[in-house]
Image (cartoon, rainbow, N blue to C red; front, top):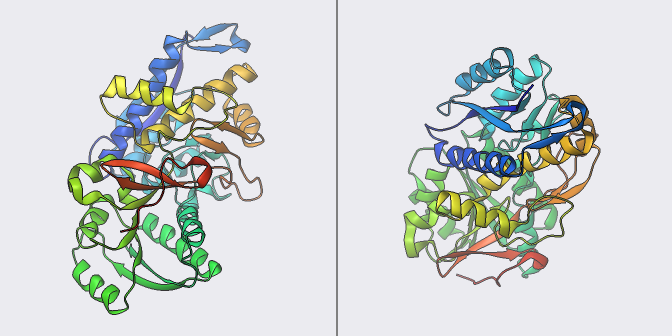
Length: 368
């Protein structure tokens, strides 16, 4: 054995390609960085091994994702199996991995289904979809919005969007908010009708979750209202809307400004500098979460001295630690990632600032 081969179904074209390419870039950067350090020390083999990424374009297609995952297992015989970007594609990959009794290291699929014990060998490092908006709702409470009405607007034909919305709805009710639920079909443009309902009920707090293009279209209707959209969390939102991005909030799995006390690995500023130098732009959370899974694997391979995926999984899911990406902890009863939390951001003067939680804030909230 002369290298460690990590395989994934990469989303390089189709509807998820924007985030899919960023995710692959995060892994490419990690592999280059790790190899610049001399690879990974594997005590069982008595040597350092370089890492190699093996990937094929799934075209944002779940069926093709399954075919690629099977190829990586049976033909390419990769040592480590990584997931793709997006919930639907990650589920397709998890199904195949489960059939072949392989561990899937999931960094890009946040649908609650993939966290369940149905996929006993899948290890997830990101916040589950149903818990995405918890920090934003906590933020509203901290800012005196208790008892107000929130409009939750979501694409009902998107499984991810529905789970995020249902999680926000349930938590909102628990916190004492009144809820107005408004649905649309992803890809449609009926936001004028939705805005009629929002104006009629004089709602000033809006949560929106659809595919990125949905959130982008919805944003053009929302000027002057306090809004938190999942799609506002990536840099393309600013590029598309320019100055009109100002004031929009989002939730993010990670931001460059996050500063934490780490148990291992590089810090956020070092990752951001490496990424910006390599790709000519500031990384979004999609790149950070993929780099992070490599970061975790390399640390535990060296700690245990093995690339045996079952031994790595057992050690990792029984560990609690903090990397530049945030906390990691697995609830062993549910298989949910319970350690990692999203942060709340807002576009201010053309820059994304962290406004919640207080310990990580880079700026104060700027009301619309």
